[in-house]
Length: 225
Image (tube, helix red, strand yellow):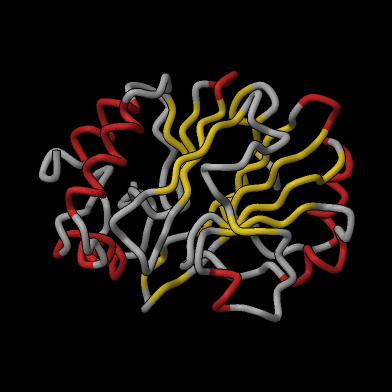
């Protein structure tokens, strides 16, 4: 189930439909120093995945990276009581039944910061996405900041994407753009991200961009920059 992307980083793209569209849902797993696992945007947890994760290391951090990525979490709380659970600002208040350790903050140092840094995307309070840079592999990990769909999808999905000017493009979705409330704050977040050193873009929905990812991100947000 887990596919290796680079040294100490894996992904699993679980099938997911939204309003009839096949968009998939990708989980990213990073193995840190001391065999600690950092799990970004969990997919459904079954015994097969549980055993695969166990073979990689000890699950230490589980991340819900935006207010729109709140699915599939409950089984992880039950099976990984020793882990720390972090979420995007606002998500814990929306879901008081989920016992998060804390909301993510730029003011706090986390045990993963020697290898992973994070940035809260401002200007979208209904989303509050937090993006992550895995420095050793040069990988930028996002949830909904960009999609990269349009290959090996259903005709219905491809039709939706074509009408939304998102077919076979690395681009934010039309819905995502509509949720921007402060374009200047969003622009500043994108500019900060583009200063980071990465060449791979791992998104929650769509194909991974393995080369020239910074150029792809800059092109995706040229309308805002």
